[in-house]
Amino acid sequence: MSSDQDAAEDEPPSLLWGLDPVFSAYARLYVKDLLQMRESRQVPGVYFYKSHPLYQVDVLGTVVYRRERDDFYCYGVDDGTGVISCLCWKEEKWQNHGDSGKTAGGPAGGGFNIEEQLRKLQEAQRSSTVLEIGDLLRVRGCLKTSREQREIQTSLFYKVNDPVMSVQISWMLEMPQLYRDCYDKPFHIPSNELSAGSTELSGFQSVLCQSVPILKEFLKEKEVIRFRPYDVEYLLHPLFQQPAPSTSAQQELDSVQSIIPAQIRNLLKETLKILQEEGEIFRKVLSQDEVYNVTEHDKDLLAAICDILREDCKREKYAEKGCHELHILSSVRQRYSRNLSREALDVALKHLECNSDIISTADAHYTVL
Amino acid sequence: MLPAAAVFHFPWEINTDVVKDGASIRTFGRLTDYLPEESKAILTSHHASVQHQVSIQTSFVEPFDPIIGAQYIVLGEIEKSEDHGEAIVRARVFNCVDGVDVALLQKAVNEQRAFFMERNDEASAQ
Image (tube, rainbow over all chains, first blue to last red; front, side, top):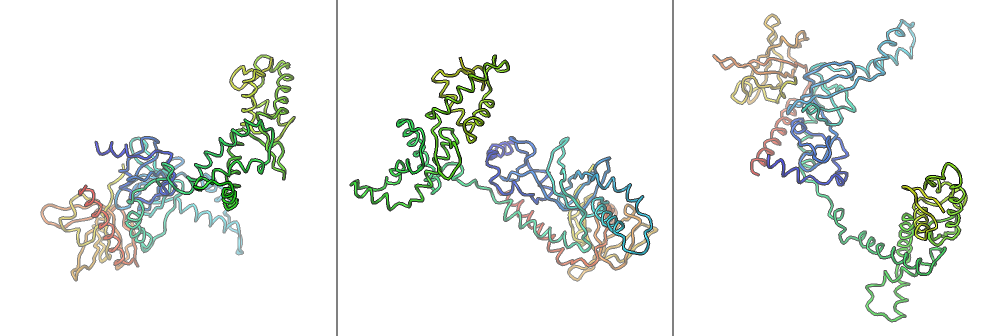
């Protein structure tokens, strides 16, 4: 029991499960393991084989138990290590075709009858989904625990035609190899996912962390209304010069020129993207000419918002509570700029509120006095 | 209720102490004799130049089409009478698999056993 608890504590956080390839695959495990695996404490329906989180499984085995219900079959599947029940839904189309097939299946001359052939094909398909005890069944589906019992809710299943056991034998030969190569190997979460290591990527991230405040500071200090990327590119140059020990003006210039300009441009692009996502800047029109408006300093935008509020708050509908943010957004988009993002509107509204130009009445509702 | 898992055993293990009374097993062999009136079939196989025979109780799987001389695979429970060691397999599944590569099947069974043995050793070592 104590070892069980220890193991549960080792469970990696669910956020990182997707990094394990086993998680998104149909795990081909022995039924014995499917029955014994422990269920995740964080998310029911997810199981752990050793350190691998998984919920989809792939099983091949002999049907040793069969029970028919109105809309599904329950098959007990034995792979030689354990028996698990598999819930296999009956397909509605087969149920319907069962009736229509009989009526349409009259004698149809000697020639090639396409309906007859189609019916035969469907019959063949249908027969591969109805199994008897002793048949070989292949199932894929989600592992579930219902009434304290593990079962597979199948998403795909079919009868395997295996007259000389070749499928079973190759399956049996493959399984140990799969375990050794994959399932029994512990899954290590790449360390740079857990903490930004000293890789090239994180180096870029750290420069990005510096470039965003630099640009913000500049826009605020100089009260920039609008700019183009090349106007501010020079601001990022110092970030690439840190290693240069000598600081003579001439050398600085040289080193700037020697840096791969693509690197700076890339950094600038990413920085502007972040600023746009934060709503600090936006593009009024999307055109060849890459012009960015600074949200807080865009007098026209701020005036447009105030105008909208002033007009609409007179209407009875908005008189009491004020206008909702999304209403303002759609009005501003019609009147001022179709490209205005919600984040940018948020920034503008906050700015106006700070200046007491507008008042927030309720959650995300604004009015003007 | 689901039956117990039928573990693979070689025909030459059925009459040894490896296989206990009541165990669920699966094994294979060539059908050499079938007595419908007794619901009894005999599977024969050769191992290390010794002929081994396994008696099968077939009442659960009848009627079936017996092909004398064909390879069969049987899945069922062991019944060992106390007075003499002769074991009978009460078959739940009795499939003709004539044409099976018996050598490869043995290899697959051995591989699987080796894998579980290895795993148990590791678990007990920890």
